[in-house]
Length: 122
Image (cartoon, rainbow, N blue to C red; front, side, top):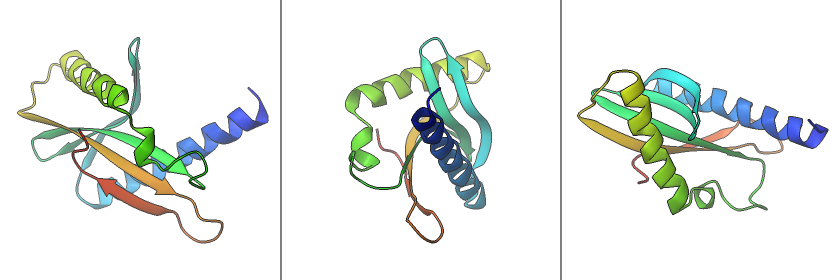
């Protein structure tokens, strides 16, 4: 892995940690982090009451490559829906509702990370 790839991976892991902490502080329960299968990966799987929440975390130090919101395409949303169904099935769950959320983590040059939680993006 190159330094650039390692750095990007470290930034992403940090953002997921910040997002998981933020969501737990707002009352969601983290069930799993970085769940993978042959179809892809879910950054965070959570419960919000009876709702199963699949959360995509996007971490950015700038918007040069686009905002975190722009990084979630319709194809990505379709994949997250399939992954949510697969995760629930693999865990023997039939949640009454499933929601896909986005947590955008921005890392300013100075100061604490800025976290924006967008519920129900698709």
